[in-house]
Length: 280
Length: 188
Image 1 (tube, chains in turn cyan, yellow):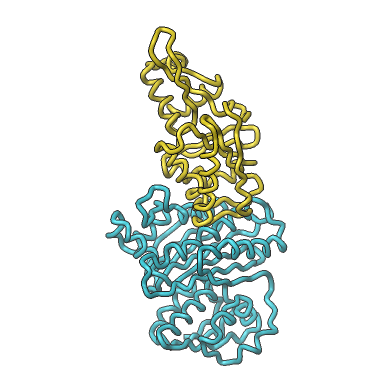
Image 2 (cartoon, rainbow over the protein chains, first blue to last red):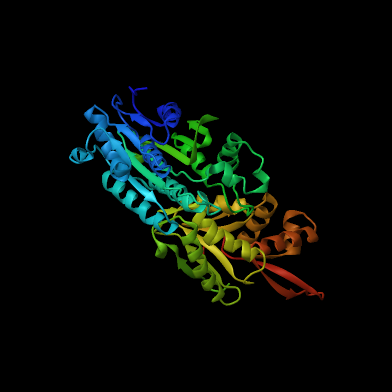
């Protein structure tokens, strides 16, 4: 199946089942893609890493369109997993492609490195935008909470898995797109460590975390960060997408819904904040 | 009231976010509280901060306030000082989650952040307005029983929102006088 449109949060769900049929040696055909958003780019990195860990190698047909190729190069995904994928063209030829606007893709590994990563991204953004106090608080606050969730929750039992956390930020004309993701145990398994939530289905677990502020801890002070982020995004007319395991949560303006998605380990979060907020 | 000391949180950075950092800050704040004389107030100053995440706030401040409520470091008081209310929103939510409240000095105003039931908020407002009150005085002001007023002041004292001073009743026995930690206009 050839992709003929922008590869984004929404389109990705449709292609994942196809890639999984040939896992861990899938053919990821991006040749007709018109653009790649940071969620899809980071997800590609995670997916390629997973293929590599399973002893395979993702085969990627790079976009024909120069704009889409620049998009992909700007995302940083090729430099992150370049050696773990096969591409139909040498990656060295992409080095001269200049990204339009600010873009960053960084690994999130230990909790002690989280603030340095957030500071780096925020300071770079501040150099480019007249960021107001409120907008910076929202963006930095979300980054800090989501990024620290990876070392804290992606592998709570210390299993033989590498969550391989990633954080990406990209500026667009009308919005800022923040992505934080990992391929750890996921919200359902993490939440299941709390006896109160042990019997929940995947979709119910996602709803419990995002709507009720549920946590794997029984300490009343723990949990609630994802719910708070959701509330702040809602109040600022942003968009939120969270996928974990086989469940997905969508929120746009005041509406939200939970549904099924093609299963993938870990938690993947996409936040789009309107650019108007950053000039407010 | 004993003169207050202050801990500037911006010594830990402009954007405070992780629980790990919050735990380090909590120890610094705890040591500053321990060093206070009885009746001493510690102002945790948030000026110069850009972000105070809920996780940091819970680890550094809410969990410490929970310890105080449970009896740790008796007769020491922790207050928040910030330039504006937006910065303390996540802290307020974490306090509410734990069933706690704290006094925040926001510029010239005093605000109770976290969760304080209306019947306690009403009593606290009166104590702050008058500076100090006994149970009979609160009972009279609110038209409630002295026992009820005593319970309210006791709960405020447990949450470290007022200081209680023991004194002898003129007719014999002992009574407690609740003393405001700040004036209602925020004068510290």
